[in-house]
Length: 322
Image (cartoon, rainbow, N blue to C red):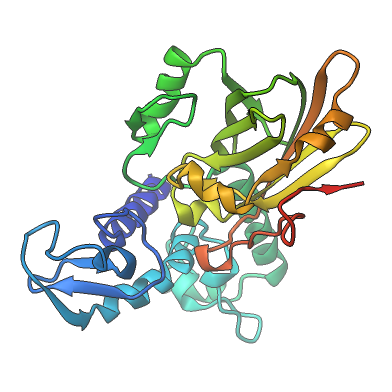
């Protein structure tokens, strides 16, 4: 019950801080209308009036929303992980009074015992709680609609309805897996056909729902990228590595993008790209090419601390080969 209440208050706070247009609680400047509704800077620059009340915007920034958004990750940890180090301030081998009632109701006769709880027990409880939470909890899902990235499907659904949609309409492309701790690995083979597209949806327990799109161009080149059905802030917790293995090996490593990112934004090289002349060397005698994918999650990373793109092919339009 206590855990549900903590999660409820975090959801409420996150929803209050979200921009009503892009549905992101980003750590950017927040502008407001005359009635106090706030928007992120990117959305404000595209609108002339408030999308909620239709009133005019003013130049005043909402500093309270900005500062709370900046601390949102720490607030989340404090609420959902009661034994995290953020919740405990140790002074002279004593637990801060603010946390002494976490699991014990301290009266006048017991408060001294609470304050002098052995440090070994405290550290053990903290470690067990953090490991338990890290193993069980998948990242929280951002509000709003998410587009289906299977084929030419135009469906846009809340996260809670997306899995049902995939099972019913795209059952041959939908797969469910379990990750090993915070790492997921998968190998498979695909037929090398020009002007062909392979789309997959993966529900990975403890991580989330992902789309993988592999495209073989009309000229025989390959492009592939991975997206998560979640908001941009959560997507930064994940990195992925795509490999095409053969006589020549190509690989790409980068941050998983939200499925709200348009596919055309991958044209600048933020994905695995293999030219036709190199793909010919990766195909085996049965006209198949081997693919490996690895997805890793960085636990307890805030949006601002998420890993940055680290593609192998930053300086050239082609993937790296060995």
